[in-house]
Structure formats: C-alpha cells, structure tokens
Length: 262
Image 1 (tube, rainbow, N blue to C red):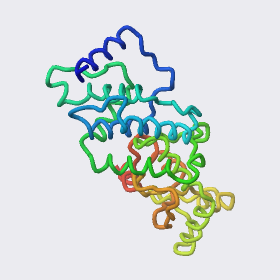
Image 2: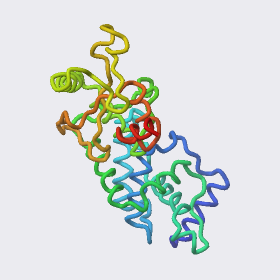
Image 3: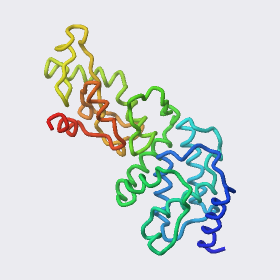
C-alpha cells in the first residue's frame, strides 16, 4: 500500500470513529518529540514498523512514567506515533499546498508546537536533547510533575518535564539560602530585581528574608546533574515571579522590568 493510500485510509478510519484515543491527550513534551521525528522524515514518513517509530514509542512510555501519567509500556504504541506524524501534516505548508490534507483529528497544541519550533531547527534540537537527557537521567521519577503544587505557574512552551526541572532548581533550599546570603553580603538587603520591592522595608522585621529565587537559565539548556551557579539566579518578589511564569513563553527579568517601566 502506498504512503498516500495509507494516509487516506487513516483519515477514513478517523471519520468513522474506528480509532479512538484511550490515552490522555498528547502533552507538549510528546508533541515536540513527534515533531522532531516528523521533520527528519518530512518527505516520506516512516511507517509504524520502522525502528525510529518503535524507538519513539518506547521513549514516550518512559516519558509518561517520568510525568506520572502512565505505568503502561504501550502508552503510545507504534500506530499512535505514526498517526501523530500524520496529524502534523495538516500544519505543514509544503504538504497542504499540494492539495493534500493530514489527519485532522488531533491535539490542539499541534499547531502551537509547529508554530514555535518547526522553523527553528536549532531550538527544536536543543529542547529535544534536553527532554531526552532528563528522561535518560538516573532517576527521572524525581522530576514527576505534581500540578497541585504548581498553582500560578504556566507550563512553559518546552513542556512539563523541563518546567518541573526548572522549578526544582528554584526550590532548592541550599541554592535559595546561598543566593540570599550572597546578595545580603553585597548589598545588605533583599530587593526584587524587577520592581525593587523590599519585604523588610515594607513589613518590618516580619518580612526579613522573604523573597523568591528565580532560575534564569533557558529551559532547553537544563540538564540533570548540572550545577546551578548563583549568577543564574535572580531575586524576585512573588508578584514579579508570577508574571515571569504567566505565559507559555516565560518572560525574562529584563522584560518584567520593561513592563513596569512602561
């Protein structure tokens, strides 16, 4: 059966409701990995029996465990991976301009992932390497995402796993204390680096030592086991810290400063 015939058959199966997704919707992490595979084989997609599809299927199972969304080894089977590649075709201008359509019944995040990464191969490659490196770490379950403790924090466009790795570094008691000690030694006070707010100045002794510590290093550069340097951390008040994390594309401290100044 030709590639076009296979795609047409998959479209018909979708229209008839033959293939139903029993697993949860694909996460942004998974879509980024699938997009990477799609772009590497853009002209002729690999079928479900190929090694690259089998490898991604197996890796997504490990990712699902790290994210605590599944314990199943067949979380995303080969057929599911192949169909997801077909979903990306509907966002590919090189494909649709020839009068073709991809699989239309997919995840709404596919379009966002395509827009953010499809035309930026260097960034896509970095994010893929960061996700794979994190899952390949000795104890990836230590990075399990718990949405209940992430209130007010928008998942970054790089996905849940790297968001979690970022937040774990921000919460490291040793790093937080070391950063505060360094700043107190240099300046004698803990001020927000975006708006200048000082808890002690406003609330008196009860506010002493209160301030958030934000990790400024780009998500795609994070790797488990890397040592975080104090110059990669910034002091922020709770309000400015929430603004940093308020959108998919997190803001920098300088961007928050600009918003305040504006």
